[in-house]
Image (cartoon, rainbow, N blue to C red; front, side, top):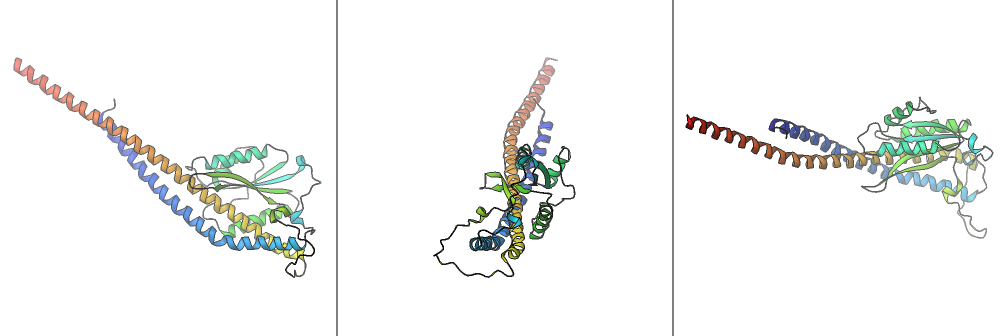
Length: 295
């Protein structure tokens, strides 16, 4: 059994750790709520952009545009596939980073030539040690997502797509289903699919609102699609940021609860050790008194 001093030192160490985990819990909670609030304020605009693309496709369903070019002539094993992998800048968030990295490796096991665009320090450090094709110039933080950062990311990806260096692009991120459940998801970013916009064919005799697209539907799409992709990218960044902080909240809460259980056990050990020490002192005093009496 450890002595009283050792147990006191362990109790103090655990109490100091609890102060840190409680502080991290509160900080992560604040960040998550702020991110969700900002996303809720911006979502209506991007849903409007999506509905406008849907209107264009409803009026011109047979339009041919590079954004919707699936490049079917490129064989699966020859396709250049870009993966935007959103991880955190630090750990202590449970399985949050592990699940994203695992999903990325599962996708890369399939056919095709993969190029990684990794967001977050954890992901960059992980793949830097792997024999993978990672864009080293793609360095963006995941802290406090902004529309401007999302737009820069989309511009970089569109440049690769338009130049033919990428045939398709996917985003791997984490979505918070509820306070205790998170899911790692893969969404298709490019090329766009018309079915995504729910382009239902309307009968010829049914009335449709009249719209004008100047100078053409192709030019309008050239302008509006980057805004739609920026909104989608921003949404994944905010969802991942909120999920990371939620995962860190749960990890810190679990750590705090474990620390409380350890303190209970140590408190029992401390009381036992103190009682044993007192008993030993009493025994020594009695033994000394008896020895003096015999003399």
